[in-house]
Image (cartoon, rainbow, N blue to C red; front, side):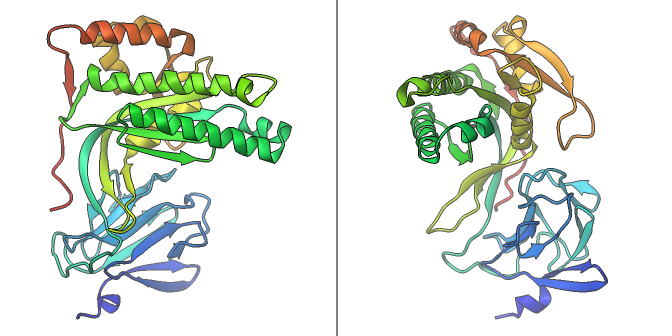
Length: 342
């Protein structure tokens, strides 16, 4: 077998010291501030888990951004989906430049060992829902630890059931937040596929608001939500034995930023431009929303944010159902890129 550790590596400088990080089949090279990263960069512009470099099943070496705050850059272009590296490529993470040494882009040099952790991504259209408990810090100071743990466990468990019932492709629980992803396999946004997203949101809001009765709290538990649609890299970041299906793209990042935006505006739910434009045209829902241009964390220019309150969600669902009752449910097509995995 070839000595991959000497032939395939990332070279970078920390202080005055030039370092090399070997890249080997079956191993993941994670880059970030986290002390457990393969390459630890103590830089405020670097996220805890910023990016990773890894062999894919096709034998190529891929760079993937892990939803970082400030982005990962390859040859001065922002990485929005896993991309094959070629020898001499320059990867920028925060203030550090890493030079890749290895095979030419598209050149396969090995077969990954069975059971190895590996990337198998393809491009697809998704809708992302992010829901976050409001004033969780305040709750944590007012509630005993056991009661707080009970609240989070109940919220996450019942939310997971709702998402499964509404055909979410994937779901993750991050602290006091829930993220769910729906796939649009045809490459279209469709009302029949978007209704489960909004029905899930309505159900989860009801779950949260009822927790104070179940747990004997003084006031209802409030949530905020962000919903966004766009292209993403979807697939398995885990191994044969322990799959970790996930979606990586700016569409996911923006959904989290939209949820955060609801803390600054008098709205409970914020939508991105793509899904709002679709609902405005095909469900006549534009009048239910308020509109903002906001500077969102990690984006240099203001982004359109379309807000709606939970009190208007029932009307939004009704208008979507009317649109769906038409003979030919309208769709909006986003172009699909070629699969990354061969």
